Image 1 (cartoon, rainbow, N blue to C red):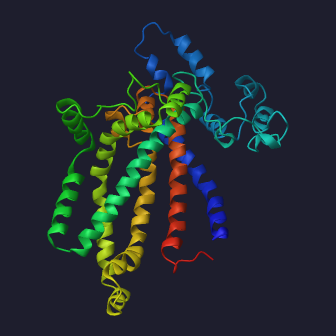
Image 2 (tube, one colour):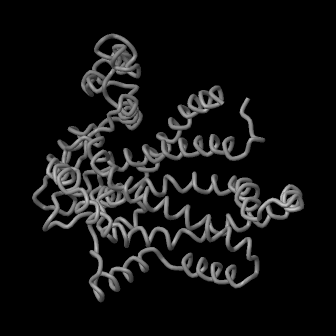
Length: 376
């Protein structure tokens, strides 16, 4: 197992490289660029736009821009040096100030710029490091996605097992109707209806946000942490109230797929010889369902959940936007509207990393769930 994990981790490197190349290429095909925001401002001159492009390195050839963003090339070799001495300038582009290849870790004398060194650049909107922008949003998304995932999986397993055990019965019919109704609801419509009902008409829950701005400091600040230490119950209850509607939206719309997966896998497992043998031996029905059938039915579910983890990491973009949840999904929408390409690329690269790690986690869980699977 250890050898398999090491091989997969090594295989992640070329996967992420080609993913970053694809991400960069796709964003290049998008109309305009970070300077498009100034297009409708008559007070911004062409010279100022050119200065903006030069400041952010947008006036350089595309391969050099990508090379510097990924961290293989340094940022100290200027355009003038490349123009005056193309051969020497190009050679120095790949060398760090310490005289070693720039892509090596900074601890070995390599560079300190680029994705390889944990530097995703700076936001062209506010000048903050992209790492700080993502870091300030990731906790909020982790809370929303984590709670939704737990509820999501628990309800999917429970409803799928009940539907399979009572195949074509009343419980199966009710669950199937519920799943199809939930699956047919557009996320934005369901979110707005929940806000209208529970926040507008009944006034039971907040319509959006992550905290009560009148009584709770901004999430992630020192003041918020201090209040959490002093009044943990109050802060957690406030957070729970703000979680209810976005979690319901995420779960209700997306539970149908996993529930149907569990139902189909359980029906197949319940028809296997080992289940009939267990029943013939007098094993309790609950143990047959949970200990024998469910464990073998989990494999397709694990695959599906692994593919859904990146979706939850990005914060379910529509859900976070509707409920003004300050997470990764909302940051992505803000970056799109502001043409903040560096933030977009940072979020997409981190999402790609989550995808490959989630698939690795799924392979590991396979071996835990099914002892027949071995990675020698």
